[in-house]
Amino acid sequence: MHSDPMEGPSRISPDQRLNVFALVMYVPGPLGIFLDDLRRELAPHSNPHAHVSVLPPRSLAVGWATASGQARALTESWRAFDVELAGIRMFPVTEVIYIELGAGADELRRMHAAMSTGPLEFPEPFPYHPHITLAQELPHEHVPAAEELARRRWREFEGERRFQAARATFVQNSLGDCWIDLAEYSLRKT
Image (cartoon, rainbow, N blue to C red):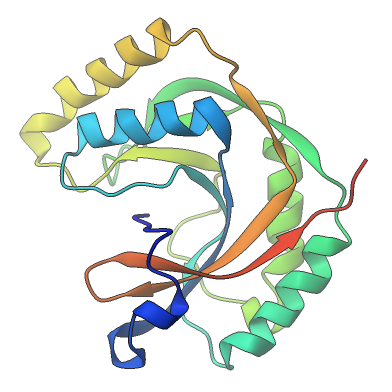
């Protein structure tokens, strides 16, 4: 997911917006910066904002405000939790290179199941697997080198490998694959 926090909802005209929405949790602080830098190194064409998707991209049959209301109600009733980043993996079919999640993955699965109903329900092409994408849509011949580079950089990283999932953001895609932050919700404090 490419994101530009400087491109708020008012900067992208309605005719540039797509009926594609997601609910994400951005990775904050130095860990998020490291992941953004790594993603740019692996896929220089990307403009990343490191995140875990609670609801992967989907079209909506209702207005975004209705869907946002459901996301807000469920998110604000959920208790904040820690998410731990584990090792580098790759989805075999799509060749997406990602970071597997340890602690917090089961909580994200429960949250996804609770949210993917009513206005937010969508027939997803793959089973939900919480992760942080590092590279996707690379030419097949570049994938092995990118995966090895990701593994090396992750081994070299000495910072904290966990963050608190305390906020979720409802986002919308636009032409050019730039995601717009529409609304932010806080999880309950523990």
